Length: 328
Ligand code: HEM
Image (cartoon, helix red, strand yellow):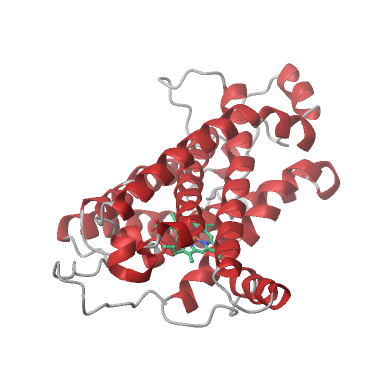
């Protein structure tokens, strides 16, 4: 995700990134309501992208080329399972929007790159609106999954609704197979994205510094989302170029994260030598450890891409009559 949400704004920091009284004044006027209004254009684009992905997934099911059906042959019934495919499509647009908003956030909090020239203001606003849309897309993904569970449940509607709610939204409620881990990862991403994004809008009450410190953890939302997808998405279930592409897309994020840590926009976040560091030695060690961990992550990503050892399952033989229904 998700990133998600909101951002390290230039004007509202206690140590402004680019001191600008005008910016500061404008930032004071940003409210959830004004950002929701501003989210409409990229929200509409997200819906168009979702519709395109849905059409593609639907076509692949009908053409019998979808790996979702290889994993779960009963899903070939498009009339019965269209909500599931729509949920998948929202999952992909959510992940794409999360990717975009994380990139924007890292561009804002990292070194100023001279070739990026919409103004910082526009980038900040786009970061906030793509963040809000990411949350909405994740919610749609989860709700459609729940709706499919209700539709496929033959029990009375209120008990079907309760089961679907528990399986979709309660950690541990979905208790079989890979989903035992994968679904709570997705839930954790959703539940963290909401406060870590929306706290921006009450930053005056909780303190801007508190908000900024909390917002940093939003990168965890994104990591959880990618982990959830690679673990459980049936369209990336098997080895192949698409799964590799999802891994590959994590490289720019990791590189921008490392750049942001090495050359933060805020001077106070720079890592100086242990002697000139003003805080505790433990704090300094932690910050150094963070930078080394991200450098290690980049090395690991390159290792995965070069070796092709990316956790994908082996594509089954074309005769699937033995039905390997293991997506549970
Ligand atoms: C309450 C939270 C969530 C639930 C219950 C949930 C549920 C699921 C399920 C059941 C699948 C398997 C679908 C398949 O057969 O492919 C799935 C896949 C997926 N999810 Fe989630 N998810 C949640 C959160 C998230 C989040 C936070 C993201 C990303 C921002 C995400 C993105 C995806 C993607 C991209 C797929 C792959 C779909 C495919 O293979 O076509 N999900 N999710």
